[in-house]
Length: 627
Image (cartoon, rainbow, N blue to C red; front, top):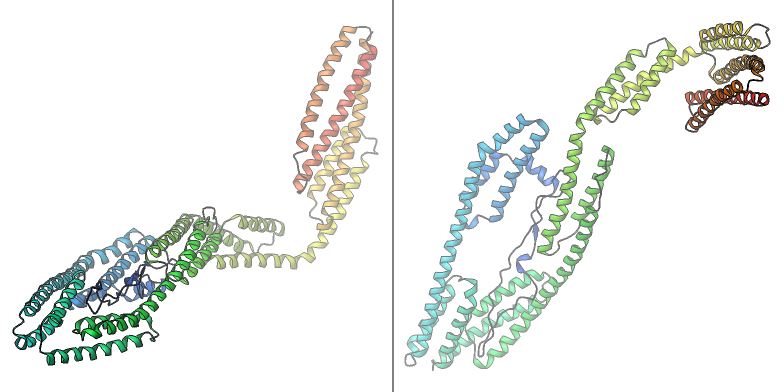
């Protein structure tokens, strides 16, 4: 899992209780099994999670090298077999695996060549030796375990042989004084023999107890010896009974339970007591054990309840992280925001305790899968955007260079337009790598601010020029408006208008506040001249048409053909008008260029309406001449 993810494993390690093997109560026996509380897995006690936090993983990467792990593996192999812990073998393997992950991370960040070198350093130089050492340690531990199993099998044979000897002594009723010391020695030998297979322990102890009781009950043992043995056994059992009663008051329930198992083991090793006291002392010992077992049962019932609550809470966290949709994230900020959410859920997960052993593994695997999926998708997104970031960096660097080269320009109009365009372009360019972003932005804004500060200082002298330009443009507007009242011909007026328009273009900037107002006055004056001469032209055309119709008067065929020609022109104008009106509905006048286009479209529409009106008048005139 990526850096913010959880640790490598959440499989708890259990400390096994040193419990005594159980046996069924039998008639005439003075001891019975210490029953394990129902529903309790003793192997789950004092669970320790093997997974490590991000900080622990980072500590392992920084503190361990391939050589240090090799040394640790050699030291582990040099130990006695009984001191080689399986957990330590797994931990060394886990640490060694992290070096591989580090090499793989190096490959993704530094390229294929660095990856090959890193992999060769770990894999070829140390992997085979490390694997061999770990396998030897595991085999050494396994051999020791097999040896212990053989020893337990041999111990079973020895104990069964001792039981057979005690049974034989019980049958020899004529040699009590001679066999009793042997009987005591056989008991000591039995107790001195080591452990047997746990599955056989209860049965072999039961047979041993039956043999001892048969020897004590069925033989006519020397009364003095038997009374002494019963008295000694009773004193030892009373000591165990007293300690068992005190265990009910011990705060550490687990410790008390373990000690109780040891007391039961000792109880079984002590011989019988007088027959009339056997039931009483055993019942007292059993009652004291029941109190400890009751507390032990209650402890694990409470733990089960907590595990159920933790299981429910972890399921909710799994559902929450699975419901997150990061497929639509399209920016670094969005990914980082989602990362904070994921890390927050991980922190919340770490505050929860264990669920049941089985569900704890399943839920952790489910939660980690969602975390891994997110960080994998994030890594792919960052990788896919590296080229785009590089292109954006190149574009913004070019703009910063251009701004710095232009900041000392005195061509205020052109330079201002270029700076404005550069600022607009800057906004359209995406993000750049964070480590260059601030410095690059500072370069660009510093150049822009420097230029506009210089321009502001120059503004005072520029205003006087702009005021003079405003006066000159107003004079041009006046001269254009005067063309309407002149008696000059249309051609002469149009030539004068063109000359004044050229003069208008040569005049420089005016104060910004007056710019739109004077431009509007100029357009109105030009349109007024054009409309004036258009009306005059229309009147002249009407007079010429009336004269031509008068010549055709009396010839209906020619008049009709002329009417058809004019009707076709009328339909053409109407179609053109509809087109302009339709296009006008799609135009916006929010921008300056849009506003100018709208006005031009409106003038065209008005001109077409005038043409249509003129054609209708012509058709009406022809209709009046048709007979």
